[in-house]
Amino acid sequence: MDIGEGPETLEKPVEKRAVEEELRSLLVPDLKDLPSTPRSAVESNFVRYYAVDFLKPGHDQYIYCHANGLCVIGIAPTHRALSEEKGVSSIDFNVGKSDRSEIKVTGKRKRNAQHLHPDSALCNVCANGSFYIVRCCVKGSLLEVNNRLIKHPDLLNFSADSHGQNATIMSKSSDESRFEDAFPGLQSRRRRRNLESAARVGVAEHPMDEG
Image (cartoon, rainbow, N blue to C red; front, side, top):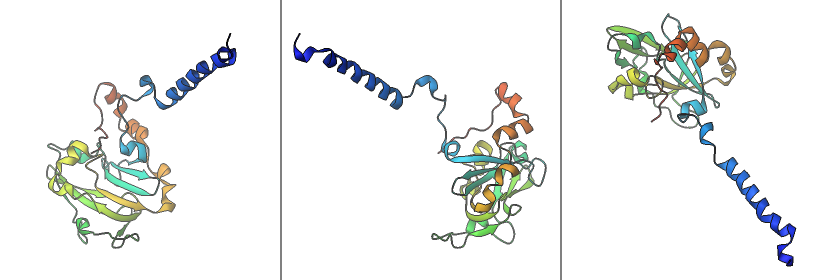
């Protein structure tokens, strides 16, 4: 037997293949381990909280909170306005003393940001002739509102929990630790609204689609 064909030399290709297979298993996931649908940006980057019956029965809102304190506020798919005949027909960011749609926040210091409280009004939503006040839910600085809703209020009817979000707020860092106690998570809200049984028969919530 030649020196190049010794036992140690023959073992090297086997070891190399084993290393390659292990590396491939780490880099290429098994299809059966992947979710049926990819996680959205909201699901991946935000913790979802829900303000159920916020100040009034049926006024359900959501707060999607990022680790940096940024919060996305909107009405939940279970909000009473969305159950009205024909759904939401208009939205107005003029809440009396201030028109939220006119704010222009600039610079790192967020100049001109409006400082709001949990019960501060963000906008008024009209559905079937009834008006519903959408609240801030958290204490913080209003950075922007979703002006697209003014021309396209239907976004609330079809994607309230994504494209139909109402406003973006920078919350107070001291308040973030209290979110979990103050607002239930997704599963808690489902139990409270009896949505688990509805989901089993094919009635699902609005999808968390992203644009």
